Length: 269
Length: 337
Image 1 (tube, each protein chain N blue to C red):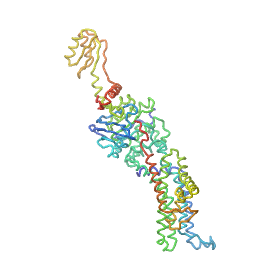
Image 2 (image 1 turned 180 degrees about the vertical axis):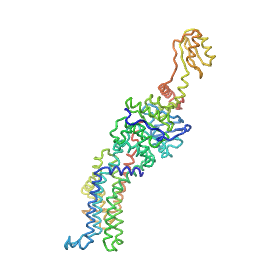
Image 3 (image 1 turned 90 degrees about the vertical axis):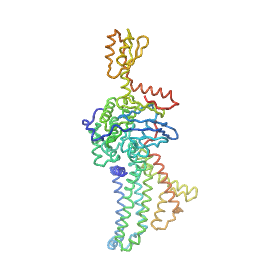
Image 4 (image 1 turned 45 degrees about the vertical axis):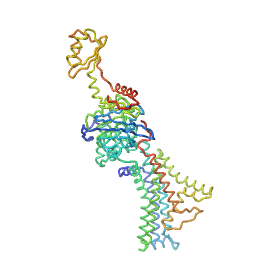
């Protein structure tokens, strides 16, 4: 499994676009870091903001961090996930790969680890670094008083990147062409969101929002960070249906992977 | 395809030594169903040859049998063992011990040859450093040494077949499973592939199970053949023994005193049968050559107009197995030729 993950990571990193996207993901992190620095440095605040309201580093600030980094993770996933699987499928490498002492779940898990690792580097890792920096910059009681925020950041990020990884691998496994797979990953998020919104309008039911991943995830992250769930145009959903919808989607993606990741698709006799 | 790299390296570092006595494949009433349809129907037999051929028409179940031996399909009934290990329960151990060369293109085109073979060797359980070393050795062994840093997608068809063989060899398997290794190769590339497999067989370090629909390939490489038809064993034959037994069988067309000639031959230990028009059939005992028959005929004043020393080709064995299979379709027992 580690061999698979190692080669998958190497494959992902062999692309300059992957490196470029990772650099792009670091930029908001630097901006948020500067924001925390300014919020906690009275001299800098006085010189730059000149009496204007200072940046407030609270749960809302960390929600923004989580949102920005998570959507950047989607972009990264849409680029990297097809590279991990499509090459194997395009050249029919599965019969050879699976004739070695690895099972189909091991194969998928190896790829999952690689993708999960890359997405971690742009989601919960920078979020927790920023949390740690805020804790370092603030007076001592802040850190211990906001540990639930760190747990929320970690949990929210993990839910998102696990979902993204499984989605990315499942859709990539069904499309041989990487560009199409990338498009399909974006489409699966945004087209389903549009369909969900249409359902809400046409059928006058908020349950259509269960197809709207941006709304669902924002609602989930707000809860995890202890923020009040904003009632935007009646889009708020209870927690249980959100978790159920995410779980069901993951099960569907696993079924897709199970159907596709096989040593032999056709029995030739 | 000509040799693309330096001369063949030593086989020993790549292949481990392996004894000759163990059964390579044991089948006991093996039945495999796919999508509710029986593909393999109660196969039984023991294969012990150094190089085992798997023959059969399209749809006979050759690839299904190979996939079952690799643990891709769970037996519906019965069992199968590879190198003494159960194909389903011990599939990981079997896959460690086996090198598999699939029939169709199967590689990662985006990788260089050496990286691809190294990757496969690491998956088979070798440490990264050793895997790299073995990858170089295997690529030189199959003649791809000079092109090992090129992407696999740029290889010709013959090279792609060879790199599949290299990855199957790299981890030092005890059994090589080759599914149609000469598929799509031009005559030169085919000859090279056959020569490589013959070398592996002669080295004796790894047993070979080779599936092919090319009788000539099996004939040149294998000493034992399993012929499948409609998911059943049509024949399980030791080709070497078959060849040996047929070498001593002679058909004659003669003119002259056949009775005395036959009596002299019987005194040498030959079994003979005479037919009208001077036709005779003989089975020569060990140590009696056909030239002895000529000598005795000359002594007895018998003219030998035609001597046909029967040499059963694999094609004969195959056709006979197909005929037998047609005749005894309902009875289903395997035919041991």
